[in-house]
Image (cartoon, rainbow, N blue to C red):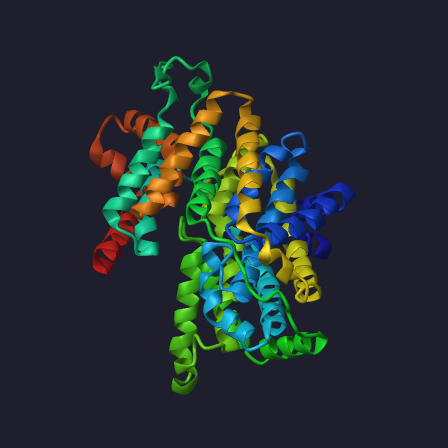
Length: 498
């Protein structure tokens, strides 16, 4: 009985999946590949997942998804490596790491900063994974009470929370979301079975594939941006330091438990907000660390204080577990990276959202439990490789661009083996550039594409079930009323910030 309490059948099944040597190899390789790709300037966890998703198509679904989850965690940590070494964040979530990490590098303490980053990243990831393991199942059970009206309101809430979380323009975020919803209508009408905006392409009867859209928006758009920038990273490649710096890094983290735990909890919470992501968590955590510091220490933030690195990177990696909570339980991504992972989950035959834990509990729990091993590997890889990671940050952009462009084109075609998807990748690559240039949030567009089908089917079905009554539809249940309140609050927060 005690064993059944400590190890429920679902968790035991997940552990059984992890015992497969191929799955263990997927975690080892996935984490290592994620760290390497995350450390390349211009790459990100989102790009890493998108590029490797088509490669995993021939693999068994459990092995493939655990590989991608492991690569996700490794890439989130890897983005801090170039941020510390050459003041170039590998991903938006590593921007704040530059402020104190690079200052430490200029002081000759790169290994110290890298080791601290690895320690807090791995430990914060373990904390977030624990939250995911504990809270995801009850949230999933609660989500089973969502009917069509509730799913529609949930989709609306997810679109409104982005500008509230990121401080973005409400009009731009909503326009981007509506454009995504419009893209989501391409294909067969689910109610009337009539083709919409397919332009005679039979492939588009199934709609625009989400993974293909992501490749264009995040990968090809980044290739265009890097090509336009036309810069080659140059810096001193010598990274001095030894094990004494690693030991000092461990002491630094151990002597600052409050700052570390605060960053980890902020990252977990902010990561669970749809669309917020690591970049928001970084700024919030750094700001809170500075606010709670003494006046003397607060004034030195940004000059190379280790508290700044701890605040930034503890929140950064904690967003991984936090972002997976709404992704797995509600089918709504908590970040751009989990949006890419959501596409991979669907590609491998699973249906993210309410019911996923019941339908595929062994695979889901194996994915969650793999986070624990993956974050331990981040500790191992990060600490042992802190003296050698510097080389990854100096790969010239002129080599990165053609390699990534080829992977994007091949990956876009491999999803459905359809020529039309190559045009879609190119079109969304150009759209991505325009969105970046004019400061429209890409995550809003992505969420619109994802939520289009959910919102449409929820609205149409709910409208018919409630007798085409506005009052009955909007006030269908206490859950619907709660979602209406959340929508109103997110809009108020956005207006106040504006």
